[in-house]
Image (cartoon, rainbow, N blue to C red):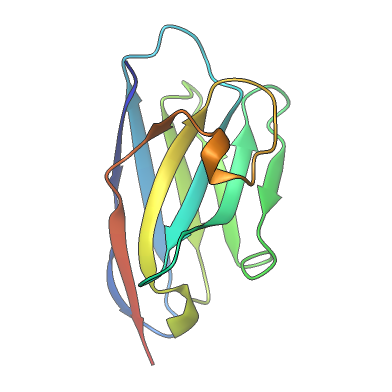
Length: 124
């Protein structure tokens, strides 16, 4: 059973930066990809970013491309989401998730394991 724990959320002002971390434990093999999703109030989980473990390919949602960067550490046990130029529209609960096999990295339903989420609030 894979266990994911996010950290790094908080309250910031518009234009500020934050870095979220996601630590993984309990893996027996590396996954296909790690993803970040945001849940807005009253809505489902929206794709933010993903990174594949083979090839280190990165993918971003349209609203964050150019501002956010997803990466992993050399041991591939921690995944990061560097968020720059934050706006109030980035407010929400951010979740990291692990996808075991190849497939659509942008679909939340295709991920196998989820963290508990970390709140990011951006004030104007």
